[in-house]
Image (cartoon, rainbow, N blue to C red):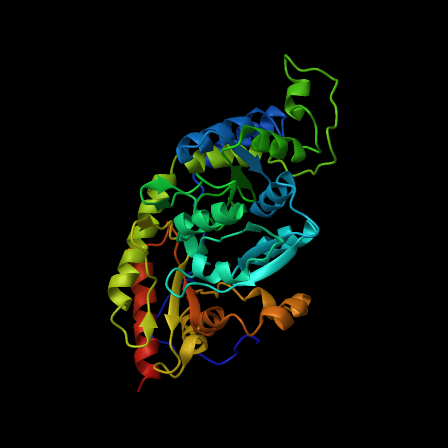
Length: 398
């Protein structure tokens, strides 16, 4: 399915373009990064350790390993858990390719699960029929920052002796029944990409409960070294090191880490603003026929990384593509999250195996549009988005 190229209708006059996302980086954070650059330590050093410890404290976990991306973290977690050839890993068809790539690069076999229509995440009900004697792990994804049913998935994993590697790229700061996402899985992996809840530019974080697993991931992230590279050159450093196993260059650097420290100090403010924008969208768009606003499962506090709207083409003839065209014509950015994995030309084998077994994923993809949602949005920005969405839907239904 290609992108729709139809012309949109103009409903408002915006002088500037409202981007789909704009990161919020403060002058203090810019100054802190500059100080690190002037220090002469540009790679993996003390600030990375400080950032990891600060993230662990914020997330109320014992162990957090900073990495260069969520993709790297997912790969590290699967490797440290010895998941590889001959093993099957269940993951959603509705996710970014990074989730799948981590599985493929370990030589494991991906098994695509359908989503729950409310949470847009995989669930025990969608995963259980896919279990085989070769199943080793489940990789749930917190879609848009909405926590998945980890209690149910955890029960399923315990019953069948499975590992859980949680792709929490969207859900830094989210809570499930009062508990912050990042606890209770074999590994939870966050993203600090530019569009995420906090950013280090590019970057990620892995949390886990097992000390040995965390130590192995930390070592694998620096080529399998037995000690930290930055300690080799500090006041108490030593020149000698050993490679315990072949690893990767997956570590974060100090400039990114110091940016992350500043962002972490504002994470609660970012969350509050995202929530306020999302709640206003819910209140002002939820009454439109043919429009479904995001649903929040009981006990869940989403991170609101994305605002995932659904447009039913049976009720709104222009459908999702008509709305995107109208948003574009009114200088408002939008996107679609995500093109299902089996729709990509690289994965025709997955389409052949799973393409007819994913009805909720297909239904969602046909209806999905992501609206702008970021902390720096002004109240007028929100008003403009609401105005265009309402006008587009109402015009399409006439």
